Length: 141
Ligand SMILES: [Zn+2]
Image (cartoon, rainbow, N blue to C red; front, side, top):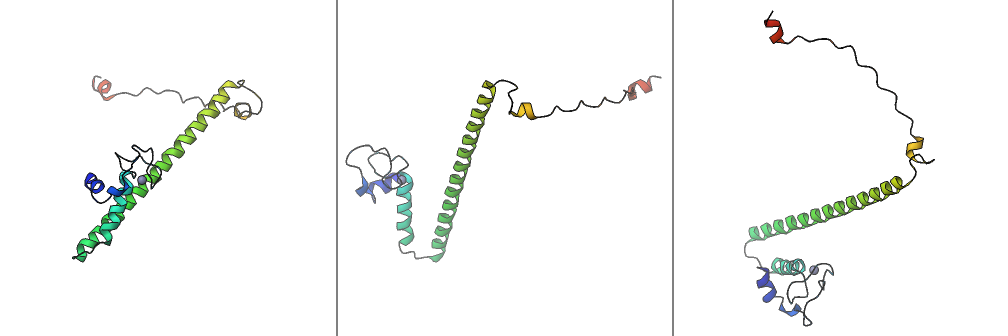
């Protein structure tokens, strides 16, 4: 489908200088083949054209609206997820950096959390053990 879009409606954006590293519209994603736009940007432009075209049946146009809204929500959710994953990776890297600095420091250097933290109290002794008779041992007597 996208090959058809690229070859037909959007042929004017074909790059004359060969392979490009980034899309000319979003400046992020890699364009495919000789196109100067990525598939996402090509699809958005195709959607705008389709939504602006005359629709003979309002119900189908309403369904198209729902599809577009659903796609936008999905894309937004993916971007939010991407941001969360990136943030988690940054946090993990910062934690690794702190722990590697802490492991290279002397073990009980003043000012570290190990020197400040009080020792935990010893756990209480467990109650004396009672022998529990199992049903098997009771039936044998
Ligand atoms: Zn793009």
